[in-house]
Every structure is written in structure tokens, then in C-alpha cells.
Length: 268
Image (cartoon, rainbow, N blue to C red; front, side):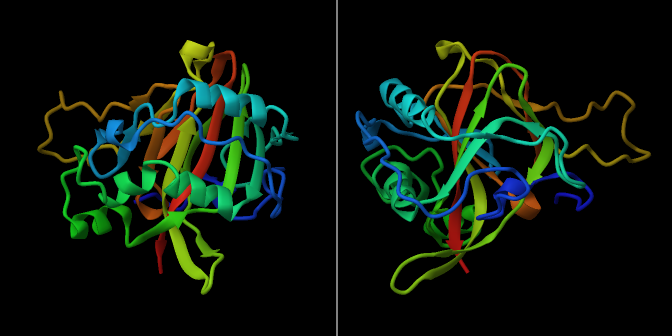
């Protein structure tokens, strides 16, 4: 469980622009189409840490990622303040955020993400090998959709995100009727990597240290950090809220790191 005293990512609060300097509001963007897409049958889970960190390699094609980087570069990104508010982690990057339920739904249902998360497609290999009840426990409830609050992050040379925890938030999903939901897992979609000239910027997780006991051998080592390298088109999901692991985005040494961020939402 994440200690309350630890620094958090204030940007997880839906619609909160004041703490991050991000752009805001419900507006319609002319997002590029999802072409070409990887067939759902070709997607599979990569288990980085069971029940905690999962990835979908090659969730988007390199061509689609390139098209999106070009589009996102045209948005009015805002650089975060260099000095964070009390209790917030230091983050230096450029960001844009928008409430766009239609895009969130397209990213959820118009790709293979929904099928992978819910285990709907029985024609593909499911490396999670979970029953529906086990999936519900994994995701923290009945998954409804993605958070319509979409965040775009660009990290340039020298920019980073210090160690922090991601909060869980209550959200209302537009509809008839609206869905009361809460976020349980962070979704990061990487659009760049060393293959595109981005060096550094890895996402690093820090497992909780082992409790000290008198019977513990002096040679016992503490858990090593879990380093997730950037891969073009990879989707990374990790728990947040009370079960979030301490993590950071390392400094970018060369090039640019681009991410599309949302969250899994479960009904409440």
C-alpha cells in the first residue's frame, strides 16, 4: 500500500489543470484514424510483474505511432512548472489534456484492448489464463471503459518525472445513463523509443523493501527496481491508487519521449 506521505501524481485527478498547467476542457480534436492497426489476434500480454505491471508489446504499429507523434506535435502543449506544489513529485515535461469520451471509447473498443482486458476473444492465446472472477479481482472490479480524460506527455532532453504514486479517481462516464466509475490501472501508450532516437526515459518501478527481521540473513538483498524499457507502440498498464508501486520516468538523454495516457475505469 502506498504511504500517504509519499509524493503523488496530481495529474491523475480528472479535469485538474491548475496543478499541472495542462490544457483543459471538453473539446473535439481531429484525431488521426487508427490505421494501420495490429490485428487483435496478433496481440498478447507480457507479464512484467504478476498482478501489478502488464504490457502489450506492439499494441500500435510504428507507422501509427509516427502519425500520432506528428499530430500531437501540433497541439498547444504546456510545460509543467519546475517547482511542484507541496506533496507533489517533481516533473518537467510538456503536456496536453482533454476530456474526449469518443476518443477514449475508440481507443478502448476500436483496438484489441477491450478484448484483451476482458478476455472476450477466445480465438487468441490469453497469457493471463484467468477466469472472469479472477479478472474482476485483477482489475479491481467490472471494467467499463477507459478514462475519457486523455493526457499527452512529451519529455524532451533533460526532462523527467521523479518518484511518485498515481492516485485513483472517481469519474462519471457520459452516457444514457451516465456510468459512475473509478480508475484502477494506469494506461501508458509509448509512441517513441531508442528506435526513434529517444534515449533514456525508462519507466522504473520500486518494489516495497523487505521488512527487517532479526532472523533475516545479513546477505538478504532488497528487491531490485523493475525497469521498463521504451518500445514503440507498447501499451503498459500498472496498478494505481492504494496498490500503486513507487515509480518514476527517468530523464530523457536524447530525442523525445511521447506518451498517450489514460486509465482503466471500473464501475462503482
